[in-house]
Image (cartoon, rainbow over all chains, first blue to last red; front, side, top):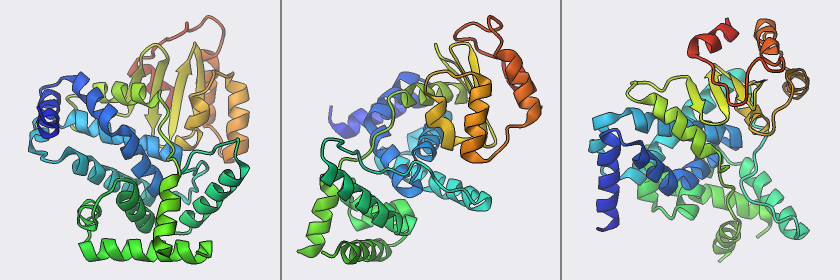
Length: 175
Length: 133
């Protein structure tokens, strides 16, 4: 059974109410789904909230799940819109994230730790849409067309966001 | 070349991962979501008590103690070891500058009394709702 067929089987099981299938989806997608949300919100707590909401929605969809043809892209889109909703509510309450680490620190290497901190600070200066594009393209390996579909923008907009983001990171890094 | 250098620097960094216990929370919430159309605001956390969200706040029961937290920003603290409600509320208010509603605290403090609730106690939805009224 190839990957697509396995995914189809898991979706069908979840649609039929098998919660173990949701566990399998979690195991396969949670890390990147969480990272996607973290790169948009810059908050571990918020990213966990988004993950919780996305999986709760998947569990409540029932037979609507059978209409999903690409689960990976589908959950990325769910993350995208959950994050937009969350950030919109936070803007209304003027909340700032307090746990915004995007990368794992290696305590034994202070130089690497300092470099990570600098990079995170530069990434923080990007728009959430630019950060999201960098994440989707660099870390998920998506094309600009695929990333654009997830974000609801054209291939050109996705490519432009990426180019602007990397350009800014380059200037600020002195590279 | 320069663009590639930035890209390779980024790729060399290891992404932060979700905490392992998130799966239990997600699965518990999802189990309660079926067959509801919208996700409910409450979730059982097997073996660790009860976690409920309301608006931006949560009540979390861990090992027989009830802690209160205001939304995601304090969840990292809430999922740690159990603390007394009074310590918790001081930490919370210092960190967030937000006050826990007095009637919620009063009700929760009663729940914090020894032996009132055993470890892993789950509250019914109506009881949780009464905390918040």
